[in-house]
Image (cartoon, rainbow, N blue to C red; front, side):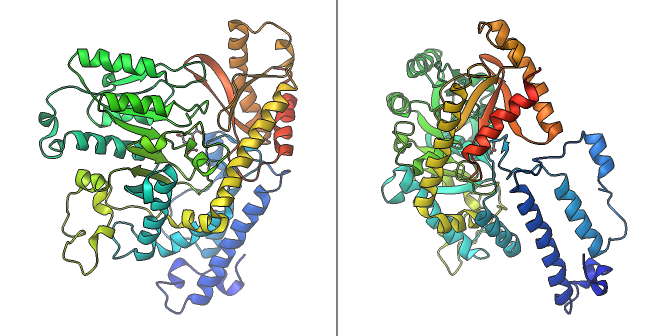
Length: 504
Ligand SMILES: O=C(O)c1cc(=O)cc(C(=O)O)o1
């Protein structure tokens, strides 16, 4: 806690209100850092809990979230910080496998601390010169890695993969119908239709509703038993829509689907897009990290350089802190011509520097958070080699988990061989072992998922996600995307699920 002389101070006693307040400011901030360091230390301790679960009403009672008329003391603020983290789910804990984004990269976090302190907007070079240039360098590097010569093209960071996918949709429509910007639907003169696999991220479908096509005109292309889009079905469906006078203009290929981690066959899909003059977008929000691995990039991402646009989220496999999503375009100039509104109070063209570095007019957002420094600093720390090692390690740990599951066929049923770090399986409680794997058993196994998940959260020792998909009842989907995870943690996961669930 704060020293006696500072404990009862209030926010008005520290900078910036009190110009003499640096000593108190420093002590307060250092105490906050101590709280953060304690949290980091605890969550890296495997004997600590991943979470202390409480239902919302109970949680409200445990917390004091009341908004006061009179501000509280600095000491109370420190208590508030500690209480907040006490009940937060430790997403950096080695036994947190629940989302695509797991883990806490500490260099990226340091970057986020600096980002917060710099507290700037990313719409102009004028107020974010260093960060804008970092975006320039990092995004060009990512376009080179995608496979566009010398990193040609253009990119921007967006607030998540869903918005990145939407920017691709908007640019694709603008490319085909530049008049749409001014004249709207009248400029199209027909029903636009887009195509994606039935395994795609739901944000692709939402492009159809947000973008005015209507989800009826977002055709869900069937996928095979591995969850990959079937190219022949794509072509059939394009022809079917053309026969109705519709205008196919956009195809999304998923590179790493959310649930099972499947990769659509980009090459064949690109051939079809070429044949029917459709924009090819690759949603590699999840699988894009494998572009950094010589061992795993091919065949999963072969042909990605043929895409017109690529979504790639460093906050997923690369472990940059949330959020960090990038959208890349092969053709430079499209983004700005699509979204530019030339607001003269921000994007003055008579500035004394090259205004091409002003990014605000490229997007529909205006204000844009600085999501680049935490990635740039992390990349400086790891080097591309370090990222490659990270990708290979995550894939190897997943392969290890598959091997261990296959060694326990009485306890675990592997649903399919992973192509990414999504390991999908059913846990078999004692009563459901050694019985034929029928639809009835699948239903029974699906029913225990929420109960077993609840036991995990009540015990606080583990978090593994579950969900149904379009062809199965609930099943567990384990994600290894945290640099903290080791083989021992995989062994713990498999033993703990059995400890918690054997009698279900
Ligand atoms: O960025 C993430 O962690 C993320 C994004 C999703 O859309 C879905 C999921 C998920 O299903 O875990 O995670």
